[in-house]
Length: 516
Image (cartoon, helix red, strand yellow):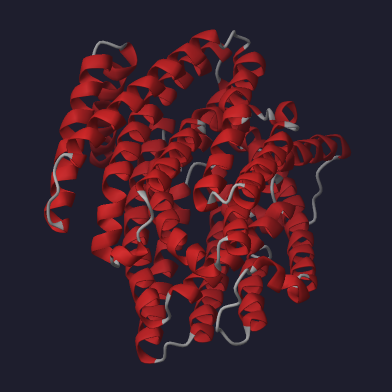
């Protein structure tokens, strides 16, 4: 398995994107049947319970990331006993987390009505919740071995596993929806496929790394364990804000606006998360390679790579965000009907939050790679407090509904994530001043805002049939966005690198195949 870092990144990226596209297709097909045979209230319940369990999963935050970070160096140095010791600790911690989430989840059952403003006409809500809880809980007893595969830069194997069982799950669920419209069977299939997916990836990891069984009883030494637990605590704090922000949106909508609104909003989140997942595939695929790079290369080299990663992420985010803004409402209107549309100003807030989150990714990748978790331990706590206070005030006191909740999310991002994460990366990772980064970020964001305003003016000037409107918006967005990017960035060294790296990866792939 001696492959270059560039080839592994490229292979992971390609497989991840293909897998994500298949997953997207399956998700939208299943969602279409879900809405047709179960309705918007069940969709709202799905969104609500998923968010409750997302918040419960705070117990896990930090464990996986901290231990994957700890594995980069021993994997690079082929230290089998150390990797096995880390995996043994990982397995033990995940068992405890699974038990904790299951226990707290059961305790919450009597309080479910607090989160629902208008109780839907759905029988056995508690049973539905228990099935969601079971699906979440069982993951922690089998899924941890995915981490060694990802950390060792073979993420494409994990993606194959996920997409295979996703195809099986969605196919069976669609058949059950058409034949029975039974939500309980729908959820049971989800549980079974989650379990089987985790078991199969566990078996694959054992075959790839046979020393895991050989050194099953070896333990991490006390000094390293303390370091890992310190990183876990810091990582939990680091990810707390994003989980609270994303996890409480549907709770607040359900409690103050209504469960049906959760269902309508969840369609937009499905679309934006789909776009987000595609844009993140490239970043996720290179994360392990960057972790390997920071363990073996100089700080100066890592900084130069960061600038390139930032620019590539910006280009991807730029296109994704402008397309999301101009196409999401026409798409939803065509997909499931105009009765499921939200206003354009709510769409704008969704897109702004999307842009801010995506532009954070290079900093997040380097925080994980350098293990800078402790340096940002307070950031997400501040973010969570700001988000909850502002969102609840806007929705409860000013009756601003979904727009107010999303505005609260934007404000919490601006006051925390926007500056805190890059500041930490530059100060403690690169040992550099972050002035140039923020200058670049502001200019790039102004270019993005100008592009959105210009494209919106053009698209709003033409009112066409829904199919033609989608084609027109897509065409106009493609042309204007590309022209602006070429005018502003074509002479930049990062842009030229962006072109060279694609050519280089294609040549690497061709050469690698020819040597086999």
